[in-house]
Length: 486
Figure 1 (cartoon, one colour):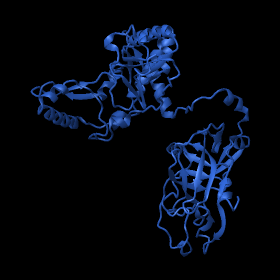
Figure 2 (figure 1 turned 90 degrees about the vertical axis):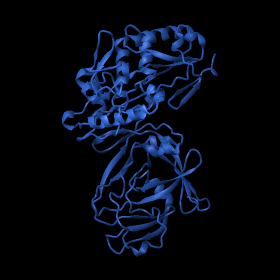
Figure 3 (figure 1 turned 180 degrees about the horizontal axis):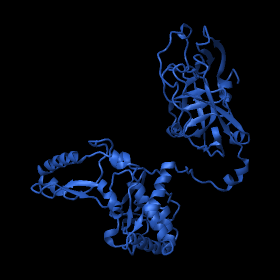
Figure 4 (figure 1 turned 135 degrees about the horizontal axis):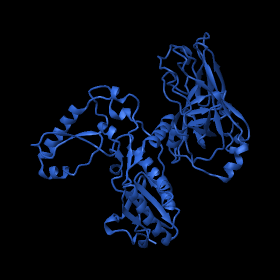
């Protein structure tokens, strides 16, 4: 490091890391009350928009690579580059590296700065220290500018800085405690780091960065999006759906709710609360005739976080499946959108599970309250998106032989009930739109609110099925299809 230029760099060439095997020692934190202190520091890191974020870093001389938590990398908004490697932990359990970003870091105490590459991991390590503690009366730290003034407060770590970075930041100062139970302080460009002391009971977890030259050719020819493996719970949900779903003669699907074990022992009773809430709603609507008339247009949605009179709420006893996919669609010359009308309401719930979807209702205040069972998938329940997504994929699989290309669109180009797709040929596009309509209708679904950037694509669509809105909103995307008419 040059003394005349107070900026240091580490290699930003991915190959400098890719072509060697490396190890990173990640300390485990569950050490009890008298745990050994680990060196932490606060670092200013530049984000993608030029602003600075203060991140907490673990200074680890036993690591050959620097790491950053995935959520922190997203918050910074920096450009991510592909990194061809796997991280192996204890027991040789492999985890995918999520990529690599280059960080522009600087000290919170002076004008020192450095640049380093960090690998993105889902998690770096748990909160350190394991438990917060009162700052001991160590007289020798009172006048020092600590790299992490709140080293005694248990909180998350965003970064792990490797031995390569430590070589850049170390300075000459070193202060030892009066005995082995007191920590050591070491001077760095980031401030004085404090470590050691306590009982020597530290546990180490070796993380190995494998050489991946044997799969380099694969990465050269295939640039695929990240795809996580199914968790155990997700796999249980998928297997449960496959083994329990049935199809009626009219084409509609009957699904079972993916309930956790022993639900009847754990679920509470919320009927009295439901009656009270219905009566409150009825009184509110009754005060305004117009509101009351509108309220007759019933829209059922499961209300979350309403406590039951015993144990657990239904939401806590339903598995939640995580896997949802959005397909990029802007590659096509001719684009179109649509959605499935009341998708959840077209999927039947097995009669045995309808007891878990009961509502209180009456059409007139003079009538007695009645209990109704909802016979279809209910909006607001945790499993509703999963059941809808799996049913659309099941329909695509069942009708693949009849509508092969439309089935592929159904499987790959829907986000829940929203269709976003396109074509390079109007003739082919019109035919596939007709096939899509037939395919969805065979499962009891109806496509509506069609929009397209070429009028010929929707020539055969009924007028009441087209979208009257010019702006189509899809998740974070907004599309003015009139401006893009070809």
